[in-house]
Length: 295
Figure: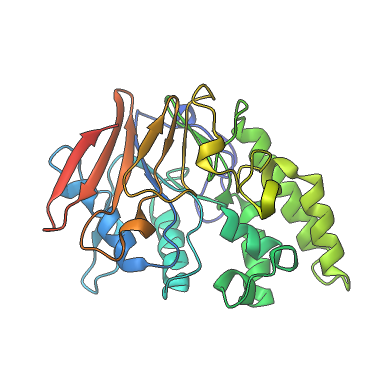
């Protein structure tokens, strides 16, 4: 299996094949600091007749791991825009502590990239840019510990935030992310952070490249590539990043970023669930009920 850290998270689990049994894989992405919407989406698993609960609420209403046989992938952009950034991060960390090793994965998206490289992106008034130096260091440390990664291999699909037209090797991608984090952490007190962050970005274009026209273009890395630039014949993968009202399949690739598009209307949020037998969308309707459809 791989080496387990002191919090029980196996930092080297990068494929479902490394886990015991045949757990179903739950995908959720682009939460963007909206804890209520994330809660609604995560609790659809269990309210749908086909699935046991993924999470459950304790007496104080806090979401906890329900103890069933799942893998859950928070596929990037957990933070920014919404009011509950810290609470969303706490949710993921709590589930990582409560679940068995390798069952909860938090992937870097372009907004987590802003935590790593704030001077490169230079956004204003976002959690990722304005968080404290200690929070930034903690984030980098969690990458080195394997609590934050970039890629995972499921049964048929690979998971990254924005995708790639080439074959995805999670071990290589996660190693590249750890190497970038090591450089940034070792030189965290460097006087020329802007130059350092730009160099790290250039050394890891497979991750950090923005792409043409200021971002999302065809040459973008796996944190930035727009769904329209993913070839239908690309290796099978599930991504977030590009906003959709419902999951969209284009050949071998599926986009499951639905939360932000639906947060202004009742219902609409949901998760993708991959099993050995296929891929389904578990969705909350406007009346609060839950439906399941094949993708």
